[in-house]
Image (cartoon, rainbow, N blue to C red):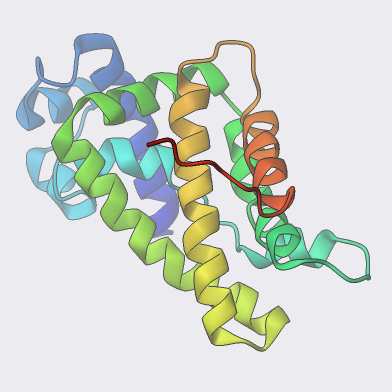
Length: 189
């Protein structure tokens, strides 16, 4: 129940932050705007950064959902990692314009980027556990999860600037680039 209330509050609070401007509104003003006390705000969020990051990175769905929905068969590590991101990509389809605005807000503010990075680390542990359950290889799962989240972050920031593109297409293009194999690059001196 607490998670549902937190998600609903975050949604309302983020709307106010986007319409008024992140720096233009205090926690007191933000709370009053959505009809809650400052104490209630701090019961659910540690600060305004936490509100924004929770909306973008909320995805309560398990990383296992995408893997569980995939047909039986053999998959490379990159394919498993991409499948595990499916629920995150589904969430991005809900309100892409708003999600892009929030991601641009995050990319413009160091405190928001730091909080976003902290949340990513927490998600990385769950991602690793999901991949380890399939691979039976904790080291490979950790490397794949870390790399896949880096791909997702790279894709998110690029997608935030590309009106009309889907996050899924941007992520898939980055995974295709990785999956294409090891390339040779020339160092010019």
